[in-house]
Image (cartoon, rainbow, N blue to C red; front, top):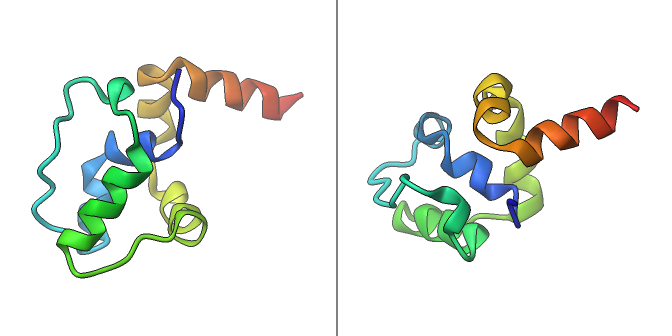
Amino acid sequence: MIQEAETWILSQPDVLKKEGLKNLSYNRTDLTRISNPCDLVGRVYEDNGRNYHKVRDFIRLFPSLDAGKLTSTFTDFTDLIEALKQ
């Protein structure tokens, strides 16, 4: 289960690239095992001379995520969508 929604952002590096972030050097093979995804996103931002704000930046990035990819990759995302429909 995903502990932080930043894992969803990390799973779609193109969203970060559209933000102008470069040098996205993190392991994408098993994102569910990242212990602190928010910290990792913060480091990506810091590596690009910026600060990550969990609420402000996540809210801005979330609509750019491909929900179809998230649904096929993360069961907890599917569970969240189903819960929101009720």
